[in-house]
Length: 260
Image (cartoon, rainbow, N blue to C red):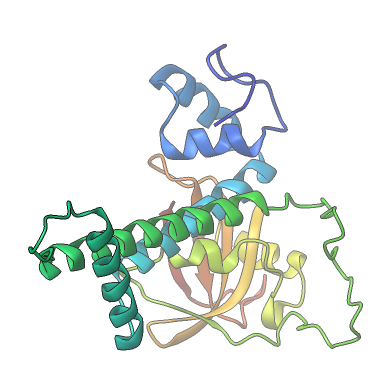
């Protein structure tokens, strides 16, 4: 990373640059810097939003790495084999009366290595784009990109509550970070205050709400809140309550876990 404060102690903030937060997220800082900086960013909602986006990128890249690779179409493979054969013929030393011998197995290995390099470049590019375009809460995007509420083509935008519930599994809550960050879908609770009243009824302290959305966890419907500051070193607290939760009738606390 290129942040100018690198190597001079703990970077000053907030706000912290995406470079500094990416170094922190990747474990690139030394132990002393990392411990001091985590203690500060855990209480800063803007920094938490960037870290949540980085978590989302890492989760997506993990899924991409586990996905089966599609085979190269046969006509492309044939053209690549022909190109490799032509290149090998050009570089082989010419001897009168002796035709150059091409090891096609070796050529295919070279082709596969090139495909692997291309896949690595695309993966790195996807990560760079995702981090570059992280927008901190309350900021507008510049450079001609749309800002919040901008809808120049006149098409309808999806309003809170229109999106289907986020499907979660009790044994894999990691996707909740990317699925909830920045969301403001409070379901039947209608607004943030309604959610806070519900959480208070469950004796959950008033914390920074990173995002909220209707979810379905293992087939059970609920409203999830991603809160800043988990326990045991985790950065977030995920709370899922019944959709009908109110201050007077809180109902069941479906999930309460520290993640991230």
